[in-house]
Image 1 (tube, helix red, strand yellow):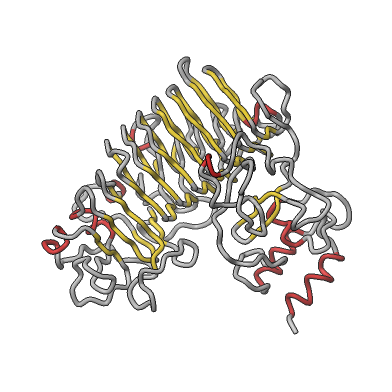
Image 2: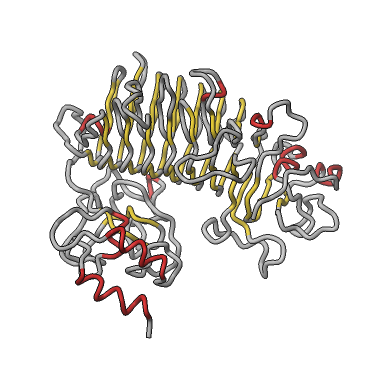
Length: 475
């Protein structure tokens, strides 16, 4: 549902006095002072306008747009983080049997930059979208953004000023925690999804999917660009992000991440299917004092240069600065990266209840196990991964940590053929099957297509359809 952009006229005084402020697009009122779910503000911006350090803002499912009222340029509208305030999405909200129930998958809470509601696939109709969906200036570590989908920001200014950076989130000397967020379809010259200047944010348990850096000049960091700061990326998945969309942009670097100067730490992240037209389909490092430290991560099928080659330098590369990589899986590993515990073996991605990039293991797929299982640098518990999983049967990572991104526990069973994870096989899944069909032989099955490998032989053919059809048609 699309939330209007009119400003709430109710209850500002009351909200100032409370520590928990509710936001719900479907709040019935009649008052809208944020004091309860049905008396919630209907606009997130109204809640942030009255929040003070120590408050928490709880947001129910729905779609929320920054309010451009009173601005000379509506594209300058943004949700501004408030120092010391926690903002959490994913609640059931007013009218639900349990309005405090929280599930970011069932109750998706979207912060979108699409002011006109007219975006089309492949980044169409972005010219009227906001420059930055979320902005954080000089906020400290007690500030948190948790449980949101952040979409459709479009920072298309002239490189390399502020309006060209960070379509999803723009951070300037800010140290917030950004957690359990999904970034999709954001665009900028630098940092399509997120731009960090000078701060030390912790970005954890996030998914960056289909974001881009594009410009007729320098394009860098399809998902994340961090400069002169100390960014931490912990347990994040980067898939399908791009820097530079055509060969006319020879300077496009960092398909997923660009780190310039400062220090960037990457732990238990997975980078796959990202690309850059010039260098570093996964990560691109530059700056004489730049330091990149990578542990327990996977870099696979990231590509760069116009030929789109997935060699070692396409996974991560340093123009200058220092890269340290340990206990990670790097496609095309040559030994040039040195480090301890690194491998260069196919991670054997597998579909599961919440996505396509779990790791195969013998408990689910007898005879095969990902080389990334139990191959990390320490125990899962000591590395904050002990309550999540890389395994499609959702068994916890309870011993030596697995490499790569760990999914949250959903409690849902995994159904072969259920490509869109609705809990049943339906016509939309049949359309996906058609796109995944490879015929007999090892033609190469994309990770998300493995949901249709009904007979487990690493192709999608008529034998799989014979097993898929009765599940689709039902009894």
